[in-house]
Length: 114
Length: 113
Image 1 (spheres, rainbow over the protein chains, first blue to last red):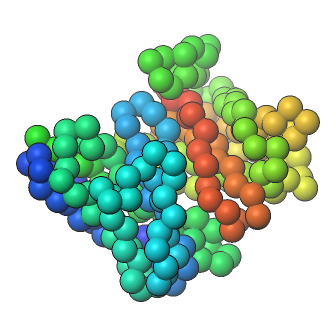
Image 2 (tube, helix red, strand yellow):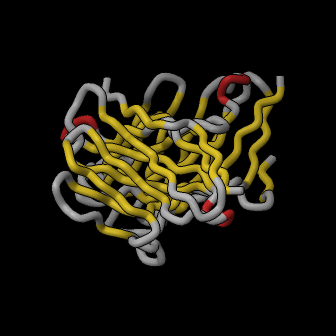
């Protein structure tokens, strides 16, 4: 079946620094990648959608200059949280879509900004 | 019984009983629905899906019911086991499986041995 590998699984960073999260589709080509954020005891909120080779489409209220998304290849998408602050601490999850595979989710990244 | 917690409603059931988790979706144009299971600290796991041209679909121990008239989706889990304890989310999209996937609020299922 389709597998999406997400790294790191957790990261702690200092306020003001940037953090990069990677998602790779291991056995299929992901034409579209989705990035979600999930706060404790809440649902997954869609942050942005990216198609390979195109600029990402951000949901309303998500700062595109803060959350940089790169989808340079069909197997790799990255989310960079720039100048992270404690309020950015959250669980970030990617999802890939490719044809009949539907939606496949990564295992998530727990970001803690101190 | 079912109760509303700080953010997630919780459903507590006895092991072996059947569980019913409900979800109200928002977009009447949505035509594809998926139920996911999420364990603590992990990404969502696919359970079962249904397209809008159906009103019922069965899997192994799980059944999804779709009522488009009232925009309601339910997940039935037969003979609930402790391993079923998790948070369950419904998700909707339109354009078949080609649209953005939007998640509902989620329900925490707690199974008592």
